Image 1 (cartoon, rainbow, N blue to C red):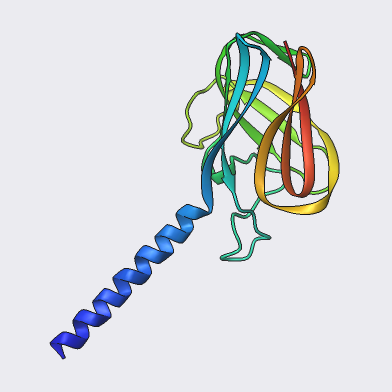
Image 2 (image 1 turned 180 degrees about the vertical axis):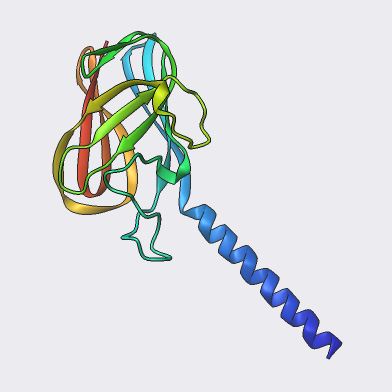
Length: 173
């Protein structure tokens, strides 16, 4: 009996480790950069997360129409040059960004003065709320993904893909 209980405890511990490791694999640190020139860049760090449809075990549920920090952590923007987003001038520095995703209509990008990456949103720290362009992808994207597209010498747009949705906004130097 003593030996059987050891095997049972070992099996439960092994299963717990596997479940924890699987949960950590659903979130991956990622980043994207926009290089205006060799000395002027933007960088965004974010959590690349699997997104589900609200079912347990199928990835992170997305609350459409509400402030969202993918993976429980806001996107972090680093700019070493002044930029403009949606008509708002933003000095060089570090910021956090939150999203208000919509399933079939334009999203909102919130740029916050806060650099707290705990995932807590404080609307009093909003620097800008920028409406994003919206489009439909031909294929479903199983993970939330962010990347910059360099579209002109002093312009990049940040593209955010989620399921069959793409939202984007221009960052100008």
